[in-house]
Image (cartoon, rainbow, N blue to C red):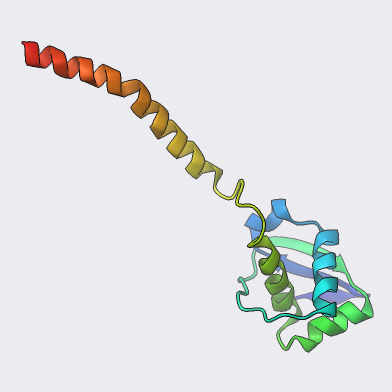
Length: 122
């Protein structure tokens, strides 16, 4: 649920979005949505990242007209743009695992071949 105070809305967003968002960026996306509304299909659940956004009356009215809760509408608008962002740094641990595996395979393959040749010769 969004808290509204003097046209400032505080909304909870998924924590993994923290590094991708600023309140100015979200406000620009809301402004774009208020000019040209689009269907919001994917609306993520609220998370632990809290973001406050100052809105104009026109932007606020557009969020109300969307037919969902204001916070759900904001999460839906942000989800439209986050999914279009490059996938960099989404799962850095996965890249680390694959890189480590590749390096280990590259380094260990010649050693394992030599061990295999020694055991055949014995």
